[in-house]
Image 1 (tube, rainbow, N blue to C red):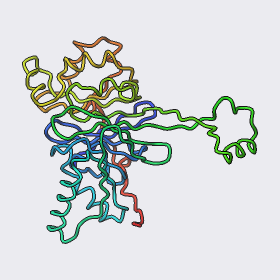
Image 2 (image 1 turned 180 degrees about the horizontal axis):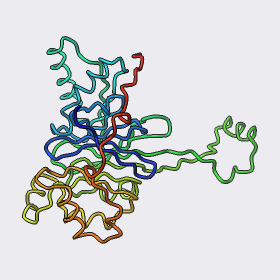
Image 3 (image 1 turned 90 degrees about the vertical axis):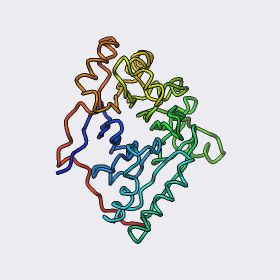
Amino acid sequence: MGRRLIEHQLDDIRLLGYSVAGEETVVAAPELNVCFDVGKAPAEILSIDHVLLSHGHMDHAAGLAYYFSQRNFVGNAPGCAVVPEALVAPIKNLLKVWGDLEGHVSPARIVGLKPGDDFEIRRGLIARTFEINHGVPALGFCVVDVRRKLKPEFDTKTGPELVELKKQGIEIEYSVEVPLIAFCGDTAEGSWLELEMVRRAKVLILECTFFEAEHIRRARHGYHLHVRDVARIVNTLENDHIVISHVTRRTGIREAKHALAKVVNESTASRITFLMDGRRSRPHQREQRTQKSAP
């Protein structure tokens, strides 16, 4: 049996993921039908319809063609990859090359977005993009629950009265946005830290690649975060949960947790989870390759 993703239940949000810098990063929120980055396309994500790809580095994007191919193989509808706009053409070329090798091109939907764009996952749930700082075309994503509420001035109206107001073109509702998960991909510090949806998302997935004191310059050069950056950042955030990803094999999880604990207070530490510090998903919990009829 191949390796399984690690599972975390963070209040009402379930994550399945695996993230080792330079090797593979993939984080799925199955109940929201999204996967942040694709890694090597593990089996657990093949039934998820939307891949939100932060950037094109191999450890984050290597499994994209396999994801589309396997969905086609098991009869699922084509998946959708939401990607930085500059990557649309290269990804389509990649799928064509694989098509030349396989004898057919796997069906796929590729959507290119710019920072600040919205993509509808389903009614009432969107992925909103934001700019991150990684030195290559890259996007962060925030999954936002958009709720419609009746304006207070119409609280006493009956159902038929509300219908009549709508027929007259009167807007009787307003939107309330609840940021659920913000995924920052690989990034150095940047303007994304000022965004309310990032700062207040229920779950923030934040990379931390470097922990050794002498590696601060390496972090800057590679547009990554050092543990000292994370310590400074997290003390200003309001997230219920902060999930640390992208730790290297050079730094064990126990060592990484110890290094972080030395530079954040106890209250902040209680909100932080290391993605790779958890139990593997049990076989009966793995996402099934749901058979869906192709359109």
